Length: 203
Image (cartoon, rainbow, N blue to C red; front, side):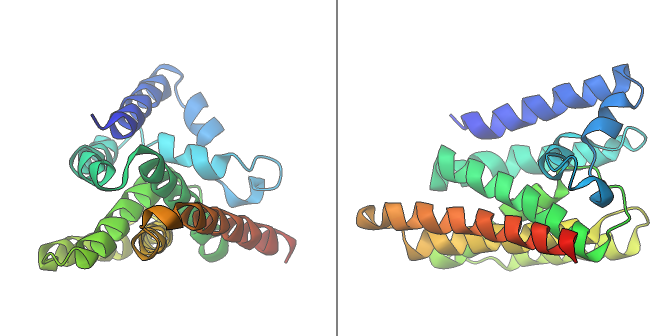
């Protein structure tokens, strides 16, 4: 059973309900605003739990994508690795926003969702499966981020790249005797994102 996928989905829906009940308090508390990175760095991750409370299709699209992609990817790589991909991709999306759109307010799990797409692309290629349709989906959704006002394409790109990188680490070090190295390298991805965050803050 894809416990992590469904757990994230349920948690996100609960938070969305709280957004409505608190009339914006939860949204403003968990959304990511780059100038607050130093004082409230956890927002770089909690951003993946909150969505636009004015555009219902925002959370519908992200949670449907998680419902479809999550169980499949989690069954391929396991719960812990799936959680790592999701969290690191969400962080990667925030880091991209910090660097490329430092004055924007961002909400949504799109960075993490694009990370799942990137990871699935890399793994599918490794398994020798055809992924033309997946490429089309990725390209279309990336393009929409550039043409629809208010959509953070920066988060999409950041999440996609980090998810793909995590999957590359996994497929290159998938043997039983390489599991420790794989874990270390995934940890280094997190360290790299943290370093990029600190570098941008101090510049």
